[in-house]
Length: 111
Length: 112
Image (tube, rainbow over all chains, first blue to last red; front, side, top):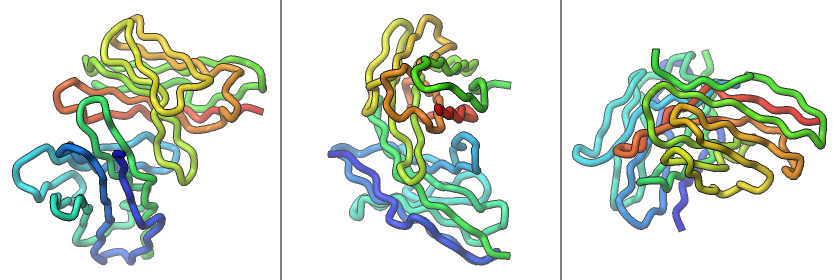
């Protein structure tokens, strides 16, 4: 069965520190992969996506993600976190009308 | 500006009443989706539509209904049959090539 796992429910980092949010998926074919960010009470904003080609993709707000087929992972990274990055982050995988979201990782940034 | 609008942002209803949530998009997307979000559960698909006058049930369609009479609009009705309707509802749309979904700002429904 298709599924997305974000193993970290909550992460706390200091401002300026690096960040990595984990995402693992189970999907029959090679899926499209996405990371979204959600501020409290708001909709989701697309950070980046992977369809094919270079496995390291760049997104908005200084985020990047790396697709590792052998590990079925699509981890999100940022070299230096800003206080405004505090939010909920969702990994999603899908193809066609089959789209699956992880349960999210809540990020707290300490000044 | 292209985007998705959802109204209202907050909605309060008494138990036993049906309520309709609005979703409009001007992105010329063919596909539209409704999700329900509860704390700690991520997003769960309620209904989706890929073409006017056609829609498919998602994982948690019971107690909900939708219509797609226009490409731009995909309203969701939460019926009195939905046992636990209090939640945050998100509408999204996508094209049929990349399927990357764009989300509206959401409607928080509280039923008492």
